[in-house]
Image 1 (cartoon, helix red, strand yellow):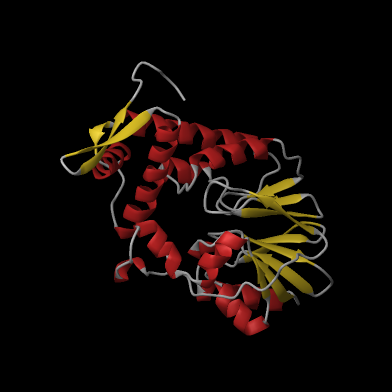
Image 2 (tube, rainbow, N blue to C red):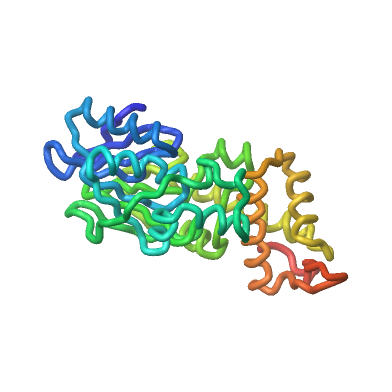
Length: 294
C-alpha cells in the first residue's frame, strides 16, 4: 500500500480498492472505505501509524465486501466511528444480507465467502466533519455514496470502472441500470480538481471514462435484448457468458446473474421486452423488434 498526497488535506491509498484519507487536523484522519478484508484493515492501520495519523472515522461508500472488509478490525483497533447511508448500513451491520440478496434465498456455505460477505461492523456516525460532503451515487448498489473533500477532490466509489476492467470482464455489477446511467450524467456536470474512483486511476478529467462506462452499458443492453427470444433467465445468462467468453464460478453466477436481472428489469420497464410463463417457466421476449438502439 502507498499513501499518495492529492491536494491539501486529501490523500489516498493506492490499492485494489482505492482508499480515501482526509486529515481533519494534524494527526486525525477519516478514511473513505477500508479495503476487502482484515489484512487490508491491518495494513491501513500500520500505514497510518507510519505517517503519524490516527483513524477517527471511516466513511463506507457502500456495503460491498471489498469496501467494508477492513471496517471491523479498524474499529476494534482504533475505536473509529463508521458512517454509511441507511440502506447500506443494514448490509454492513448484517453482511449475510448481501449473500442472501444476490442469491435470492438463504445462501449456501460457498456464498458466505469473504468476497460476498464481510465481517460485520457497527455504523455509529451520523454527521461528517467539516470539509467532507456526501454525494449520491445510486446505481451500482442500493444507496451508494461518494465524498467530496474541501480540496475539491471527489471520491467516486464504484460509479465508474476502469477501461481495463471493462474490456477484460465486460459486465460490472449494477443494481439499478436507470440510476447508474443517471449517475453518469450527473458526474459529467461535476467540476472537481481530481476524481478518484475506487477501481480506476486518479484523474483530473473523468469524461472519457464516463463515456467508456456508458457505451459498455448500452452495448450490454443490446446484447441481452438480442437474446430475449422466449428464453429463461438461465438461458440468457448462458448466452451472455458465451458471448463474452466469461468463466463461471459461484461468485460470477450471483454477481453477473443479478446484474443481468437488473438489465432485464430495465428493458421490461422501458417496454422493450415482456415476460410470460410457458410450461411453468418464466421466459423473456422482445416487444418491438423493429425499434433499434437504446
